[in-house]
Length: 160
Image 1: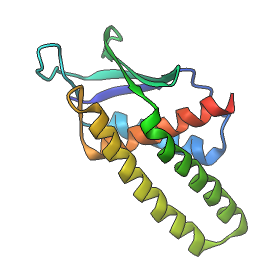
Image 2 (image 1 turned 135 degrees about the vertical axis):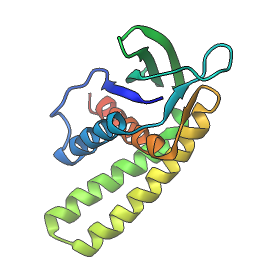
Image 3 (image 1 turned 120 degrees about the vertical axis):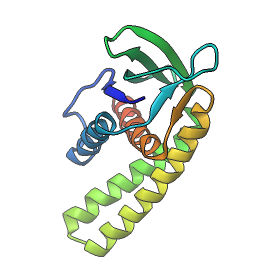
């Protein structure tokens, strides 16, 4: 019922700003510590975990390569990245604004940006839940953390 591990394929740590790397590390740790993630089998029933998730962006698709705890392939689910693009772009702008506000020591601006990030995460979590409906059963906190990882992956793809 949980994610044992989350692996970002083509993970090249240290290539993004420290703030984004910290978001990635926290999301991966939180998913491993506490997540609700169950895969619907071919018969429509939920399968038992724990699972290992390899998450990647490939040819404009977000790919959930789901495996057993022993890393044996179970199923790969691809989602079009298009519906996430606007939210990801907004997230990246907020991150850039946050970094600048921290450099300038503008505490009130940092708090406003953090509120905006929380709202964006909520929107991203809702979209993630909707897009995975009938494929993967996730709770809101898991969806928020997965959205963070989508943003990190999208930034890595655009940085190449």
